[in-house]
Image: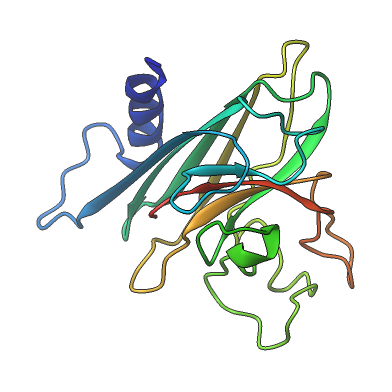
Length: 187
């Protein structure tokens, strides 16, 4: 797949201002992950929990660039999913596992002290990485998230594909239905 150079260029263009020079630039951190969804096996990079909605053989690619002075931009590209369907997707705190719950909660830059987090003050696209998308007629989808913070010691460990686009209303904020699939990403 030759998508990586295009994703890297797009993310770098967002984070690094053209012509800008810094006396001591902050380090830029890149993360990339690619996987073909299959049933869970230990060490599998991409897992489907609902093959009727994320079929075996569907693929996902995540690219993220993070810098303290530029925030974090994350791109998600998927192929082989159900055509013409809305999905939610978020960065999660833990790696993929045998069930969707293994990925833990959404990664939050400022953690909500109440779990599960459904307060829009915490569960929102500025405090979390939301990558909702709708597939086209061929089952291909793309999403982009840009937040004004960078990863530090705490990092997200996966991207989970959910059943619906993400809700924003109080009491439901951040929810997106069942966890359909998971891709390990070492943010």
